[in-house]
Image (cartoon, rainbow, N blue to C red; front, side, top):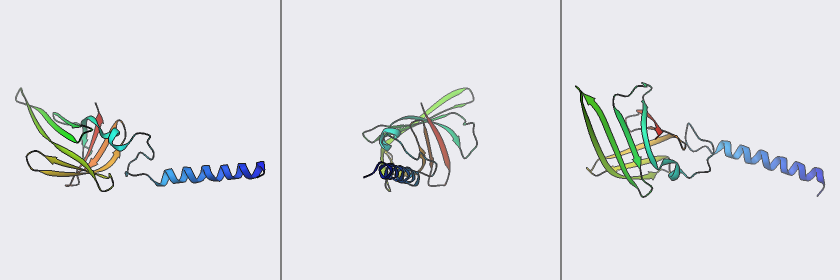
Length: 138
């Protein structure tokens, strides 16, 4: 193979690889490519920063995903000078080719979250009521 043919082959392979990565974006809002697995990106504590584009959240909502499938959701809010905390526990799992997270709460409730964006520091999803929620890793 000539030197020119090798360069052309390398160029074609590079273009095909780049186009392949751009077209394989799993979630609507990205990322297009990540070296971390979906499970590793999801694992950890997340704080809700935005619900339906409203910005400020009254109180604090924390989601915690453990690698072993355990899940905890904590709500903390103030009401007339008193602080109240409510925690729900359960298990989580990926569904639909890791595009949805299924939450099975210990109280028997189930909720599906459609992942819109999942990076190491951002997690956006839409719940079953079409409410868009954005979280940042703590």
